[in-house]
Amino acid sequence: MIFLGCLFRKEEEELINKLSNNGLQNAANTFQWSLLNGLNQMTPINIINVLPVGTYPKNYKKLLLKSNRWVWKECRDNLEVGSVNLPFLKQLSRYKKIKNELNFRIMNNGNCSNVIIYSMYLPFLKAVYKLDRKIQITLIVTDLPEFYDLEKVGGIRKILRKINNYFVYKYLARIDHFVLLTEQMKIPLNIGNRPYCVIEGIVDTQYKNLNSINLLSDLKDRKIILYAGTLHYKFGIKSLLDAFRQINNNKYELWICGSGEAEGEILKLSKIDKRIKYFGFLVKDEVKKLEQQATLLINPRTNEGEYTKYSFPSKTMGYLVSGKPVLMHKLEGIPSEYDKYIYYFEGTQVKDIRSKIIEVLEKKEEERKEFGEAARQFVMNNKNNVVQAQKILKMIIK
Image 1 (cartoon, rainbow, N blue to C red):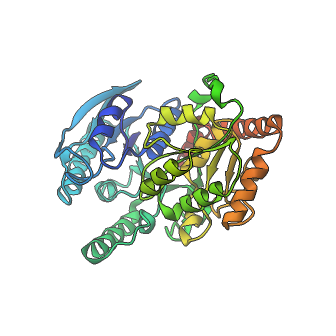
Image 2: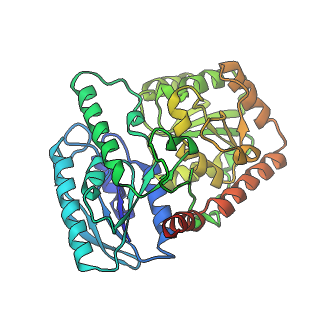
Image 3: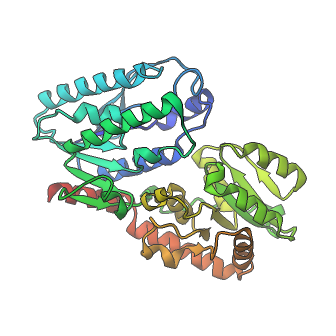
């Protein structure tokens, strides 16, 4: 089995973060590694990956991305595909190198009969489009291309986006199996009678035992709300800030980490209201440390917009596995089986957010702990990477 992914290795993380102007794609990287850890326990697998970084010089400080071979566990022959990191040239060179690598491996390894692709990335889809039909192609769809970013695009970018999406959907004709984040995705993808399964999220069994982190002594009397994620206004960060500032309680604190357009406003408010703490963009391990210090993990993203039907926010799974109570809006893409393990806002107005925050934080500490632990056990037992990998493999075999 070959896995085509947009991922980076742990040893590359620090350097990539320094070179990137937009931070790392932590959520996508975590999802892929969790799945790979699960698949690797059941089947031989090798990886062909591209670095998930932006183009030079606006988004990434490196012009040339070098190809290199690397080893991971039993996967001895993995390839990171290099490219000239410029628009068009980057995608074109990646497509050609991946296509050649796939053909070489398939011709020289008669046992390779499956390719799993992470995301609707055009160079991946084009590279497999003309592969022999004996090779089964499974596509993991985490986002629909028409919703890749919510910022308005215009002019030439809008035209290029439409061209990209046209070819993406054209090449879906070659896909044999689909892995979806939500059930609703099957309609716009026009899956028809092709097999699919829904894996809304994934947690790694390596987090079965939480690292014990002692609460800092000066925080023991405080109640900390943590938001970790993209700081775009369309994800509700403004409503969260407004709601928190209306709470007159000096024991409450709002911790925020991430990057996005609201950074300036958050920094400004943190100087006015000392209860608001902004930590900037943090790597995954640092975020997990903050989660263990927090009282409540929050996501203010609302159910507005068609894209919510096709989305299961990745931070939801990361929040739930922390063992801390989670508060968010009931999004259309969240299955009802999660309802027992998540606190939901009862409206989208600032007053609704404020009142629910207070309600949850004023619950007895033991009740909050039991609620958070029950949610953790639910995802660890039912959504772990081994269970989810088995679901994918059963679909392919069947």
